[in-house]
Length: 223
Image 1: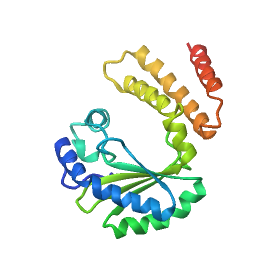
Image 2: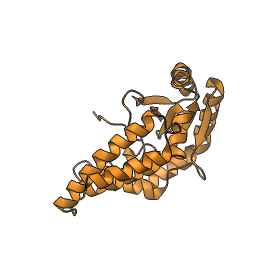
Image 3: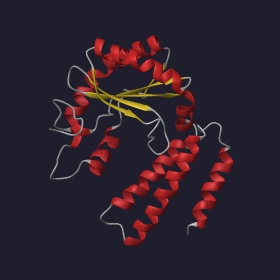
Image 4: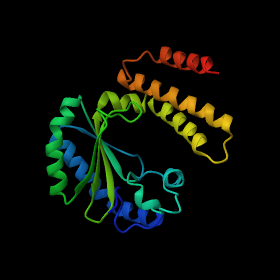
């Protein structure tokens, strides 16, 4: 039995995008209905609503390229996703039972639920729901606060995440030297602490210039 969530009917990246493309309209209609009922604000990716093929391929190469466990595209379950924003965490939690009912009413099934408010991913806090649609595609719904989303999107949250990802790539690369890996390890630890601090203050309350100055100082001190 699989210990992870996968799409049904997907074997390749082409299968994934074909199924996701067919699902965009019905998925977004469901999310808009959910947001209206629970008094939230629905946010979708711009354009066609899908994660870019380049980013998906990068994820497959980085996380799912094990030849002994070749799951590939069927394990990338955030190609089609959305975020619903709320005023505060209390509002998020009050909305969850209604969201569960509405997902089921629309023929979906919540196959995974992660509480990242209490166990944040690199400081960023939300609830992450993996929803399997009737056609077998697994989609992603994030529930978080407006302040947290603003910190990620318009503050330094996404920049810190991108830098951390690059350091992780160096750390996990078979072509990196031992010195490069040691430096990347230090950077990953530093960035983890910085992201915890940044999101812990919910981003917009941070003094951004002071935050970046501290980051630069920490980088200099560890050299």
